Image (cartoon, rainbow, N blue to C red; front, side, top):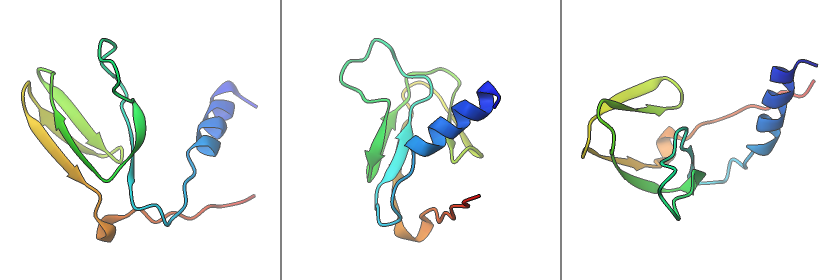
Length: 91
């Protein structure tokens, strides 16, 4: 097995969650290393973010991208009508 496949398999096995979960999963790809007490991943029902980046970007579900600048506020809610519906294939 190639290293990439092994890593992808490990990440997939660690990120399963039940369809009954009403929260959204978040992951901060490039966290601020100086910030203390701010988790880089977890579950939340609502998030309010303040950008500390000049010419930053927020990416949702890997394809929705929004440009943000320093001081911009972004509010994200978990809405039942937009919940991700997944199918697990077992080979």
